[in-house]
Image (tube, rainbow, N blue to C red):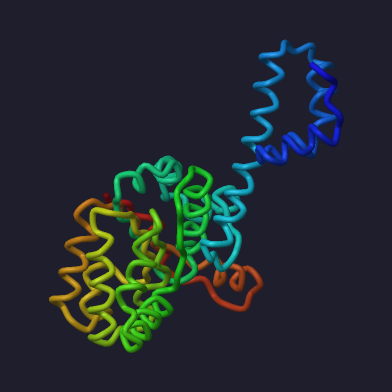
Length: 265
C-alpha cells in the first residue's frame, strides 16, 4: 500500500467525521507509542477520544437547548444547610431512573431553600446521562400555551413541551393561575402522562394546589396524574438568602427553628 500523506489522512478523517482524531492525531499517536499499545489497543484509544469529543459536544449543545436560567450542580448544593435532606435519594434521582420510568418529581418548600438549584442540577445530570431536558418557569409556560392557543398553534406548542424526556417547570404557585391557564396546564400534564417525566418546583404544598389553579377539580386531575408515579420532596427550612442577611445582622433569627426536610415518595 502506498504511503498516505497527512493531507489525504485529514480528508479521510474529515469525511468520516472523526474530527477529534483528525485534530489531535499527532499527539494521540505519540501517546499510543509511548504507551507501547498494540494496534488493537491504539485503535480503541483513538475511538475513545473521538467518542469523548462527540459526547461533550452533545452535552454542551443540550445544555443550551435546555434553557437553564443559571449553572448549578449537585457539588455546589449546601446539604449542610438542609441536614435532613437525604443525599442518597438526591444521588439516586441524579442517575435518571425516574426519567426512564416517566415519573414525576415534586420539589416543594418555601422560597430560597434550594429547589431551583436542585432542579437545574438534576436537569444537568440528566443531560449527561443522555436524556433530553427543557427548563421553563411556570408562568412563562402557561403564557406560551395561552399565546399558542390564541394563534391557533396550541397543538404545536403542546408537542414542543411533550418531546423532552424531562420537562422542568419552576416556581409553580408563586402566582395563581386563571382557569384558562389551569386547563392548559392540565392538557400538558395529560399529554406527558406515561410518556415523559416532569420535575415541578413549588412553594405550595399539594393540598394548596386548588388555590393555585383556581379550580379544585382541575387541581385534583393534575395531581392524580403527577402523583400516580412520583417522588415528593418537601424542604422545610430557612432561605439561603435570608440566612446570609441574618449572618450580617440585617435580620433577626426566628425564635423557633423549623424542621429542615421531609421526604416522601
